[in-house]
Image (tube, rainbow, N blue to C red; front, side, top):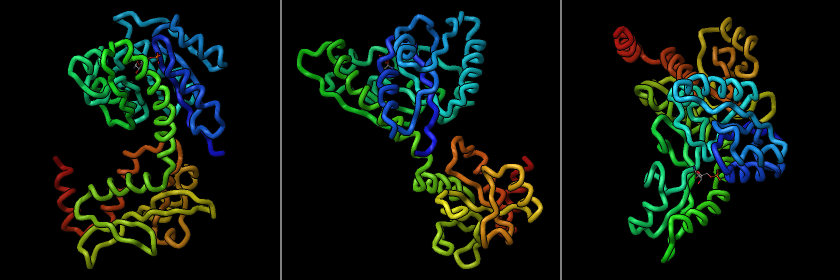
Length: 322
Ligand code: GRF
């Protein structure tokens, strides 16, 4: 089986969602493993559960109000040491500093007990009942700097019954949470290996550049810059490498010297594509963990510049000077 994504779980209390993630990961087909459980409360019941299951638990002293930055720096050190790819928040009750979120951009997920964007923050069930909603529920979302914001990955609606109290509704929503979170996390960590998802990401970046359009090249998805008739390719999807299935994008580099140097220094990322290599195309592998999509975007931009007609590059060069 392929390498499993390494997930760290952060919690502050009971840890039932952490347990749901951990139990799901016992299935050998689960695409993630829980490599670390930690949080801001060394006495949290959830940490004892994790320990009993043999998970690695790190107890950090609770941060004093003035020492929040040190706490998150220490936590970050633990996460990096453990080689975590993702962080799953499971009842972690601290607001995470923006610089920490930026470092893990797109790699932190959270479960929230409401149908977002409804009822961010606390007391969600009381609000849903008071509003007369027919459904409460839960959402798994990517964590961004705004609390309980960020793209929603998956949701489960839970019917509100006559006479429901916030507690009775919370109980049923929690059952739904335990079903939803492991499934949503598994889908999230595998989508980065899904060729269709990777291609959609490349398409988004390629089409964001001026005067670009989709066109196939020898049967592969590709993007050109310039007019319909005289445009030139600057990005080409690549599906195989060394006979094995892998997903990559080909972009133009500056020449054979740079191509050799890239492949030499970072063979996990770069390769010389058969047939295209002699014309200065370099392959950038995209089905590895922790792809830096900003970096891919920079490559696409460079490649675009290398082949775009002067009337377009002139404009961007002028813009760069400001
Ligand atoms: C859950 O309701 C979750 O949605 C919210 O905090 C609660 C944590 O419960 N973010 P538990 O610690 O996972 O049992």
